[in-house]
Structure formats: C-alpha cells, structure tokens
Amino acid sequence: MASQHENISDDDAELCVDKFMAAYNNAAEEDALVYTTARYILKLCSILHMNDIPTSLFIQQRATLEFSATEEVIQRAVVILNNFSLVQGRDTLSINRKIQNIVYWSSGSEQRREWCSTIAAALANENMDECYIRHGLRVLELFQANIECRRRLDVDSQQHIDIGYLISKIGEYLINNSTIKKSVHSDRSYPSSSVLFG
Image 1: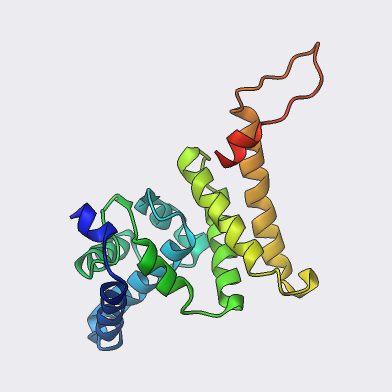
Image 2: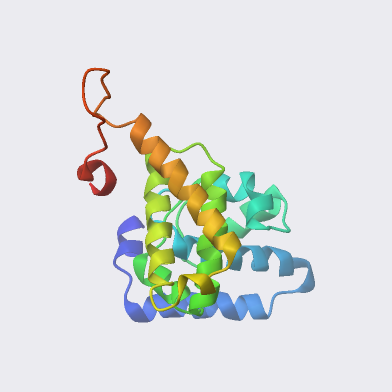
C-alpha cells in the first residue's frame, strides 16, 4: 500500500483530488462538517512535511487552527482522506508529494501565506522535537517563497508574529539540542549547518 501511494501517477493524483472534491461539493448536510474539516486538514498537510504528520496536532491545536470541529469529527475526516487515498495513516499521516503539490498550488499566494501563518502558530505551541522541526522548516521555506515577490510591509503583521514565534521556538530547540556545547572557557558556539539543514 505504501509503495502504491509513493508511486502514484500525475493523473491518478489529480483523480484522487477530483473525486474528493466532488464528494465534498455533494456531501449531505449531516456530513458537511466532516468533509469541510477533511478539506482543511488536506490544505494544512500541503504545507507540512510530507511524512510524519501527527493527527494530534490538529486535535490539540484546534483553537489555533480555527477548527470548528470536535476530536471525533477530526478523526472521521482523517478516515475520509484515507478512503480517497489522499493521505495514509491514522495517528501519523503521510501525503504523496504529487497530491501535496496539487492542493498547495490550487490556491493563491495570499491564502498560502495564511495557511503558513496559521500552521506556524500551531507548531510553535507544541513541544519541539525533530519531527516538528522538519515541519517547521518547511513552513518557513514556503512562507518565504510566498513573500519573495511582495514587499514585506504588505504581509499581515499577525503573520510576522506567528512566523517569528515559530523561528524562535526552532532556534531554541536547535541551541538546546546542539551537539556543540557551550563552555565557560570557550567562545560562543552555534549549531552547525548540518544541524540546521542536514
């Protein structure tokens, strides 16, 4: 199953997204919230690293991510995304890169910046580990890519706050977990580039 997910063709990736959107647009009233939640989770997954996406992030950070859904609805939404082969996993999700790109590029630059800002705030509220560092670095990279063609003053101030908070949390983690230790007898030490980008 994992290999099939990894080797999906461009056409099959588009078909998976199209089938889901058709079901989303035609969802019965009682299923509307679940499909809306599934669509939002899919958008957030397009911003995060493609592997090791913890479902707990969406549950624990419901307020920050502005979910109008309960934990049960979020779990049902994850099942729907699995049923349409858009993600794999329950507690920890993975998303195919081609599906990720289709979803990511389906929205404009301004909306993508909003997604980055929102997920940055959610990540920064979590206890940083290597998994969250990978997700955080991807979010920062995508946010930067979406402001390169714009003046920084055009970017919403709250987005700067959210991104800045995430940067500080990543920096704190890297300093505290660097293999290069400070010594009272040595000059100040910084994490090596391999810690940042390795």
